[in-house]
Image 1: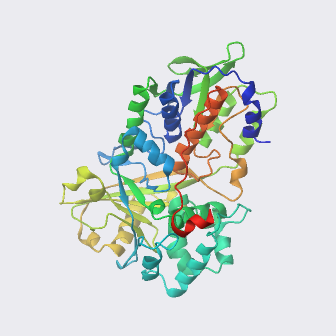
Image 2: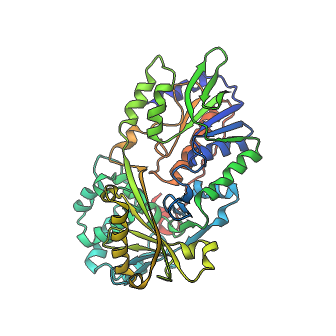
Image 3: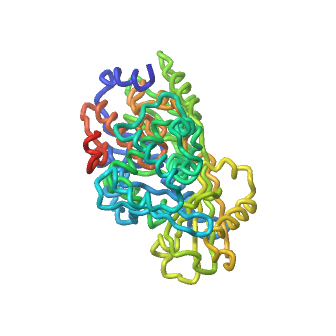
Length: 484
């Protein structure tokens, strides 16, 4: 039995008295937990060891450029109901620009634009898909045949990786290179031979087939730390507190008072309940600081954590002396660089400057770049970018930045869900949040917010005042309603 299973059976044994809560970790999981509980009347303190919130979805002033940049470009889809609901709660939903089309660029600049039509789901993208010049007719037939396998349901995780699944379903090399791979590597940040068929199928069924709205792409128009800074204001406005540079060094549970004591560099904090909203590697480090349990639950959790692995993302930021392209974003085919985001057009404060361009290029699952130097990555990206936008060859590069997020996401490898714990634990009034927990989603901002909502729900159940925070999935439309 996993830690979550043990904990659910013990929840009723815990004292229902929970008034104040400490949330450890200021990423999206911690922020969504804290906002949900603070809004529900709990006294919340959020502790974050960094000087800013947002975790892996944050921004900072880059020392080499004096520019505020995101640690990596983050996007959301229309199917991300909990993330969108979180933005609405914070009053920042209008800081996201929505697009209903996706441009695939071939070297040489030829464009294939995928966008919905008036046809009912799952046929809404069909006209633009069959018109795409980036794929041959044989490629399109193979892709359509593969997509049909996801029509009735998302496949179960039976241990097969998606690369093997594609070969078994007769996919052409070009279909893999120009459709399956660009979409999935960007969505799941992992190579196809390390991706669970379940999550691969979930991406395509949910975003491409469920409804036109589900596949809409949202891009934040302000720096991420500014976006999530509104969560700090929300927590404070509901009587909570956010403490930055507050690293928790140890935790102790007093059986007599049934309260937790948290030791930080700034002193001790007592609280009725604790939510550990940490990354899986931070949990591994903190686990020895947790009190031992009679049934060895800490060993079970440690065993679960050992099955998680990281996958890196690299962001490459270029500032040019002239306009490079009129595209706001694009998928770049057949090269190491995979996505282009034109920040000069996407961020309102930069649009007034028509004399230059600020582009961010993204390489997901960027294992091949981890060992390369900054200059090697810049040279490679410039050479490849010019294949799509010839103006690069005429432009002067004013400044550049390379950001390697080596621990960007966890890998959704086949079989991993068996080791993803739920929010409740065997420790009294101690709960888990984080995109790596059992959210039913891969490592995404939506998964992180869902984990926060699930942790808040588990805490309110333990307090004897159950509340629901998790928002329902986006409903299917068109013919897809027949396959729910």
